[in-house]
Image 1 (tube, rainbow, N blue to C red):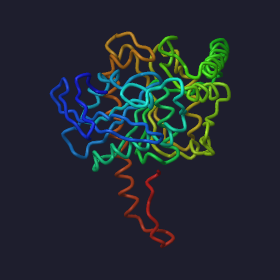
Image 2 (image 1 turned 30 degrees about the horizontal axis):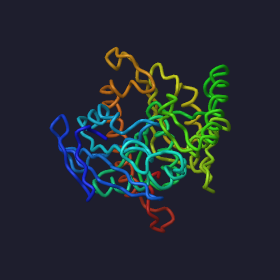
Image 3 (image 1 turned 180 degrees about the vertical axis):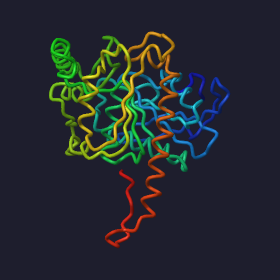
Image 4 (image 1 turned 90 degrees about the horizontal axis):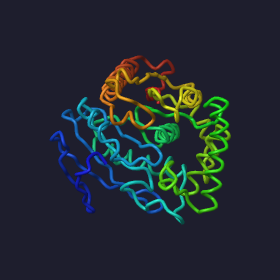
Length: 332
């Protein structure tokens, strides 16, 4: 949720007023298994401006990203923000007996939300901006070509494979993640809000998370898709933003995630406390001091999409060497 004052409308789109005076809208999106999402929208002045679709971290609610969303919007982008399944305004709420995992979020939820955002901004390219787990899900969904997006931005995101965290912390993460998954299995859900990690989650989410932490591979319960192969084929532009003092997505974890997308043009940037006005940063605190990051991401999106558009236009004017008139895929 972009603003705590936003209004909702069960019948469809609704409009509110953001703190900077811009009109806020919302749309409801349905996905598999009766899941429903409220997608908050901020429209830029330019109808064809890119859309930044923000995907939250595990256990983080969409409204937490209000400062970041405002910065992106003030930079000239359309912005869309929604909760992950089971979190915040999405339904059903995660609890014992509610069953879903990474597969539903990757194959069903993100594509459904991306389609709704594309329908709301039909002249605009969509860019996924994923934080932490949201970044992993954004890459996985984009790699399977279900979202139709034009680029992916990772903020404080990395693989949770234990070897990406160094020997001591990595072993601690390995043991902890397996214990968390075992506890979630025994209880029938993960009571993260009470235990101080990850928010309340269904068992399958914690098992998917723990499996990737143990094996380093994305093997999603209930799916026969080879996500590792799909990631290796991904050719969308990717920006990976690291954050100072981020112990949950250190450089080694980001390195491991980016090694999975060798065909993608990848840019990396580090958001330091100096760039954040000397404010203290970490895996979550950057959101509260994100003006510098949102400005950099906005510039990267504008430059990257302009380059791709110009390149595609130039390539389309070249004769087809095979004379077959095959359409240009623009690297997607």
